[in-house]
Amino acid sequence: MTIAISNPAELHDPTGFGYSHVAQVRGELVLIAGQYDSDAQGHTTSSDFAEQVDRAFTNLAIALRSVGLDFADVAQLRTFIVDHDLDKLAVLGKKIAELWGDRPPVQTLNGVASLALPGMLFEVDAVAVRG
Image: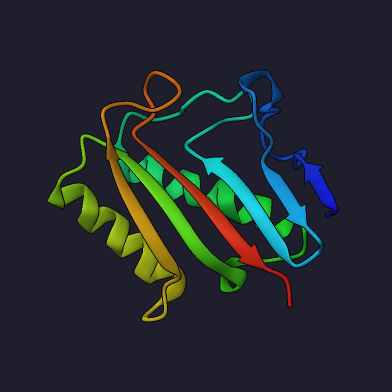
């Protein structure tokens, strides 16, 4: 099996945190690591949940574009919300509808107590399909 690991220059270097942003498998499946509200150094930029969701999906778009894909190519999302509640679900639902309309990818939402770094409130990873 051929796996190509990459880290787009427009995103922070995640290798110090023990992961990479993108893995292309056999040229068909593309796996995108958890994206969050990260700046060029990997730090969160906002304490506002909605802003973190927006930035995480912006970073997901960058990762997808780096391998010639976009949101239409995403088959699956896994989302992680710190202290999940219905208000946060509404924010996420609005963002998903903005990006995918009435045909969102499959998704598993995980409510969690915390994420990898202090200040992270939201994270999303994705599986995309080429062609």
